[in-house]
Amino acid sequence: MSALKSVDWQWENATAGAVAGCATVSFSHPLDVVRTRFQVNDGRVSNFPTYKNTPHALFTIARSEGLRGLYAGFYPAVLGSTVSWGLYFFFYSKAKQRYSKNREELSPGLHLASAAEAGALVCFCTNPVWLIKTRLQLQTPLHQTRPYSGLYDALRTILKEEGWTALYKGIVPGLFLVTHGAIQFTAYEELRKVVVDFKSKKSEQNLSGAELLSSVDYATLGASSKLAAILLTYPFQVIRARLQQRPSKDGIPRYMDSWHVVKETARFEGLRGFYKGITANLLKNAPAASITFIVYENVLNMLKMARRND
Image (cartoon, rainbow, N blue to C red):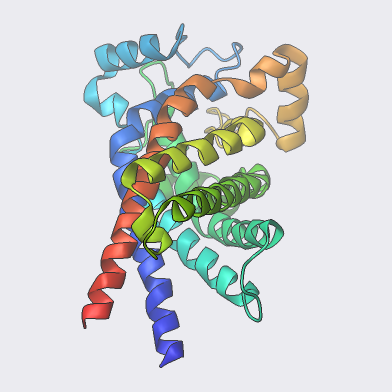
């Protein structure tokens, strides 16, 4: 019976995570397009428009490309986010359960290990989807190569022209970005614990953590943990986006590997180059993280209540 309950709990986490991820993407995708275009624009490539700032980028894309431009790469983004969050919460909860054997409470180090383990597994599963999303977002009116017509066409064309290994471009910085999720979830767990302890001391009733916390608490915790993760790991996002660009007509990639990106960016753009697009990223991810954790925690609580009533 306990094993069955454990499986139910893991799938509840996966379902809640998938719903949260889908809601997040739908809300914030235009900012994701802007962020990606800022990230790859090193000032030396002619097929990318130049934007002054995030509002100017949104206005320019809307005017020249319409809603289609603002939601370029939306389908792989929804697929990738839904699968990623679902797998992430599933793998994360399984890792926490494994580490919590014979322990009353997980330490910050074990929360970090659980999040890192989940992030690495998700990275290998979803890198092809994120590569296709990036390429679709970078298709602009200035592009010279035949544009991909959609998710399936992009996948077919990449396999035909570059081979299956191209689907894993950016995997190295992607694995380094595992620290993003690890930092975010560790910060979230630790901050959540502090808030629950604080509220339980003030409350005269013997309530669980889920009953003590409100949607405002989840929003604040989600945004705070995301901010810490973004500031520490953002350069890896820039490196990955630049590696995942479509090669030129002659098949030569703009950057050869992660180290080439680091050297070229440092040489021509300095430290600022590694933080291009961070404003759009913060505008996208701080509220998005709030929405994600509000949806996740509430869906999870709803599923638990439904199971108790069965």
